[in-house]
Amino acid sequence: MKKCPYCKVEVGGNPEKCPLCQSKLMGEGDRAYFPVQDTMKFRSFLYKLQLFIVWVVIIACLGLDFLVHLRLPGLPELHWSLLVAMWLVAFEFLIMRQFKPGMGSARKVTMMVLIILAMLSVTAYFLGFLQITLDLIVPVVITGAVIANFVLAMVDKNGNAMAYLLSGLLCGVIPSIVLFIVKDRMPVAWMVCMIVSLVLFAGVIIFKGRLVAGELQRRFNV
Image (cartoon, rainbow, N blue to C red; front, side):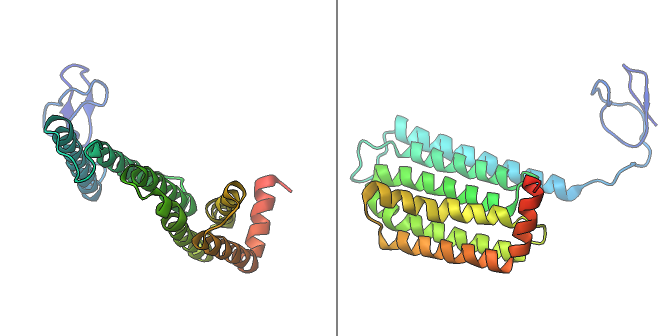
């Protein structure tokens, strides 16, 4: 049994450090009480490795941009490294959110889509293709997210249909209506996005109506 030379306590199993003072234990250990989670260690190593690579890329891009003054063709005033850093930081944030416990699939998909679209819009603004992004790319991506949430709502067995309904309204219907009110027009892609969102909203109500009603009663105590 191992013993801490400072706390003078004996520690069973085969730990490396004292649970009280974190000093290195002396002596020979016993058989480990808990199995070693090699899979979790390997995943942790992979996450740290990709995080290290991301920071290497960010630092290298910042150096090439601000120290070497490397510029994109046709955009001599653009600090492209800031866009790269923005995308990579957003990528790391999405990875952390995907593995956060307690988050449903609808929230993960919706958050991922919104963050990606925000990054894409900023990038499009500086690279000069913002209008086509807002009129075409954004509604197409949102339509794909609404369809994905509909599929997840159909296979969900935990009674979380309300989250998929709200995500469909938030991503597909509300932006289309706001765009029409503000600009007094609606591009074809946004029109398709709103129609698909409404059709799938009705589909969830039809196929998951009882679950939706039960979820409303559970959430609002009615």
